[in-house]
Each structure stands twice: as structure tokens, then as C-alpha cells.
Image (cartoon, rainbow, N blue to C red; front, side):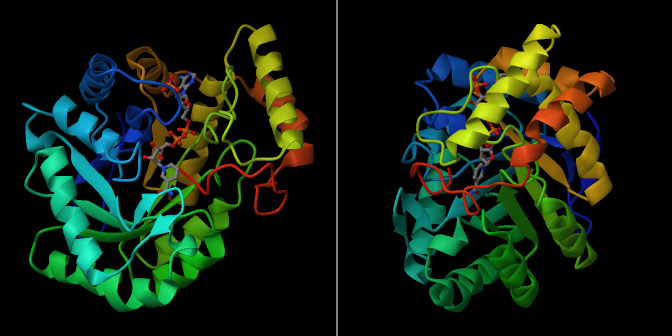
Length: 316
Ligand SMILES: NC(=O)c1ccc[n+]([C@@H]2O[C@H](COP(=O)([O-])OP(=O)(O)OC[C@H]3O[C@@H](n4cnc5c(N)ncnc54)[C@H](OP(=O)(O)O)[C@@H]3O)[C@@H](O)[C@H]2O)c1
């Protein structure tokens, strides 16, 4: 597995990371046995960055991940989790909640420290409270050596970029904005990198959009986007391929060009995780990609901020 180094002489991390939201049964019910197998498979294949959050499955993902990581040497993985989002519509960037949340995460994750602590989906919370309380608390934790990187995550790229640069955070995680369908993170990632900020591209499959199975019911995208993705998936299947493979290959290939540090893919399946890593070693099918790009062109960059869907959750 190819690796990149986090800023300030940080740890080497795999360019493909495991997103553990799925382990919280966000997409479908996941057993602990499946969680264990997915995590062990990912680690065995060289995946060394794992991202999770208290919000995923309302603490279920962190608990399942903590159990799956029991007995694994801590130096084998870089761990990222989040603070500030505690429900579908519940944000709290107060200092007290931030410190309490980290303590609770450490308990569930059964480890002494997290490497990257991120304020979750910042655009939905109180940005003044974020700047006045949560980020200073994270900086203190960093100074004390409890965490190594201060990060922010979200969907609104303008808000992420503004806060990241003004507040000089270490990491930014954006989601569903650097996929075969929506590529708006690209130039933003380049600018953030020039400020020495590490960028994580989460949800390269557009939260299930670019899979054979298609997006979950709660997906916030518009029906027009869903239809185009379904047609692209059909074309891939007809060609004896799988749209997920193409989407993973595309995201990883383009990530390097934009200076994205790692691409965070979600899975609760050992088989899918193996396929995702294997996809990196197979050359992209340029002819198939051209056909898929043509189908997705009319809906390119049409996120749900541009073309709102039927509601859904504000991020995952
Ligand atoms: N605001 C934020 O901070 C934020 C927002 C979104 C995501 N994230 C992070 O990014 C991670 C990834 O995002 P995500 O999980 O929401 O979306 P994603 O990675 O775009 O898609 C995940 C979905 O794709 C499926 N999948 C994965 N590999 C597959 C394969 N080879 N073939 C077919 N299906 C495949 C998974 O199903 P299986 O489980 O069956 O494999 C799951 O349903 C999250 O876990 C989280 O850590 C952060």
C-alpha cells in the first residue's frame, strides 16, 4: 500500500483509509464478526488510517471499532475520530462537550490516544462556538500531547476552507466532493495543501451512490443524480466490471494529482475492502471510464447543495 506522511514529520498513513461509519450500521445492520473481519482485512492489506466518530450509529461504530482493534498494536494504525456532532440534528462545540466527548471516545475505542481529532460537520454547528471553544480546546489537547492533529470536517467547501486557513487547522476532511460525479474538492485541496493542511477525501463512492447496489434511502442527493449513477453502474456491469472499482481507481489516481493525503472509503465487508485495495493495483479501464464520464457529465458537481434531493440526513 502506498503511503503519505502527515505534516510536521507525522506518521506515514496509507493513501486508502478505512472509514468506520459503516460499522455503526449506518448503511445496513453489521455484526461484530463482520466489523472484526473488515478491520483485520484492512490492516492486513496495509491500511493504516482509520476514521470514525461518536455520531456514527450513535456511538456504535466507535464501540465496534474499539472491539475490532483489541490486541492490535497501537503503532500499526493512525486513528481519527471527531467531536461536536452527537445526533442527526445535534451539534455542540462547547469546550465541556468537546473534552467529555474525547474522553468517552477513548473509552469506547479502548486506547490511550487518538491521532487526529476533528470537529464534525462544522457548517451545521455554531461557528462562533467552534472558533471560541472547540478549536482552542483541541489546540490545548495537542499542546499536552493528547492528540497530534486538530481537524475539521464537513460538506460545505467554502466554510471548510475559510475556517481551515483562518484557524490554521492541521487537517480537513471533506466528503462526497471528490468522486467521479462531484469533483469540486480538487482545487480546494490544492490550496489547502499549500497551507500545509492535510486533506482527507471521504466517501469516494459518494455514500454508496457509485455502487452496484446504489445509494441508501437516506441519501440526500437528487433523483436525477441517482438515475445517472444507476445508468453508469449498469454500463460497468454490462462490461463485466463494477462501478465501485472504477470509482476507487479514479479517486486514488486523481487524489495524488490534487495533493489529497488519503481517501477514506467506508466498508463493513472484508470482501469489499479487499476489492478496494486490489483495485489500486489494476490499471484503470480508460474506455469504460470515458463511457461512465459521459453518462455522469450532465450531473457533474451537482451536489445536494446545488440540486437538493428529498431531504436525507445532513451528512454521515
Ligand atoms: N462529515 C464527515 O466527517 C464525513 C462524512 C462522510 C464520510 N466520512 C468518513 O468517510 C468514510 C467513508 O464514507 P461513507 O462510508 O459514508 O461512504 P463511501 O465510502 O462513499 O461508501 C460506502 C458504501 O460503499 C459500499 N462499498 C464500499 N466498497 C465497496 C465495494 N468494493 N463494492 C461495493 N460496495 C462497496 C459500502 O458497503 P459495504 O459496507 O457493504 O462495503 C458502503 O455502503 C466514513 O466511514 C467516514 O469515516 C466523514
